[in-house]
Length: 252
Length: 249
Image (tube, rainbow over all chains, first blue to last red; front, side, top):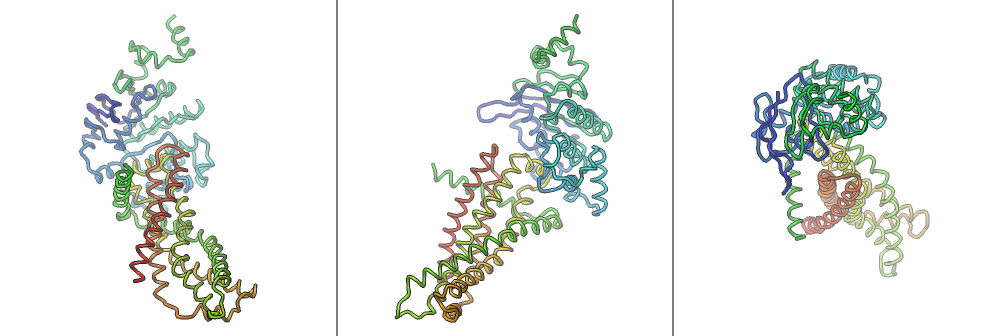
């Protein structure tokens, strides 16, 4: 479980996060949604420790990382898996080597055990056949799956995904969403997904936070979101003509 | 303003070096990386070092022959001067200037691309000291390979001078050989190697610094590569002046 309380972050004069408080439970897919520039990425970066908040607390199962020194942060990060918007696979390594990388660095497994574990993770994301390929030989969806395999290699307690569906077609996006959701349930991970993909919201949103102008504007789940009276959220959700028509039809 | 910016940049460089010079998390991974970098930065540079040194050696020999030839000058002076130029300056300083262009831009663009494609963030998130993981193997690898490159350069330059003498007939090989061997100072070769260690550190650390601090996209990576090569070249020349003064006194 991750708890954040009163998170503030300014960049020079501009206030990006204005006192956000939330709890992210384990075994649930927690989504952070909002318009571009709402502060989603900054919040995620603060939570994973890539940025230090100006004020506030971020607790990983009771451990406040804001008070952690560099070494403590590094140790905590070994419990974290992260899926980046660009997948961020290492170009110089094959897919198998990418997945083996965290095992090489932090596990005491033998070489055979590391290969076995990496192949298990690749199999879990249905990518075993591409283990010898280089990242640039993979499609966008395959790269994301390889990145998920790398993120789960060390059996993390916390999984963070920054725009996992960006640049993917709707079908591949659904597959990535399902994979994230299944892995979260299977390993009881605390997962936080940063997205503005409405399919993800409706598909895997166990817990949804809507950010607007650096504030937490709405909080709920995928069943509650359709009935919200929050105007800013409604504007965001039904910003496309098709979705507006679907909503009007449903109302009728 | 420029002075303040320069001091700030130097401070950032020192802070990065503090992170770089740390005990590797896994020696096995470190040595694997180092071997890879020795191949990438060192072995892959051998052809260009041999090629350039061979021709420069030949050109130095021709120029000396044409410009200092005199009935009063012993014939072996051409070989002697060619050797001294190659050992004292060309094979360490000028060769490292050339390597700053090849290796330096390569390092900056590699690390810069890793930065803009979030690969460095991925390393940080995993709990890896990305600065040490990426930069330390490059520094140690080039510092290990540089004496070999310097020796190869001296040999190729001497070979170039010898070949031009032999095949064009402007000098007899015997006169050149006497010059090459005349008053040979072993210490000069050591000076060249010592200077090249410093230059290897400058090339790898400065280029890595420029790559590591890239923000933006491919355009910024390109600019960083150019800046890295310019800075490395200036620093190599500055260090050359100081080291030559210190070592040759």
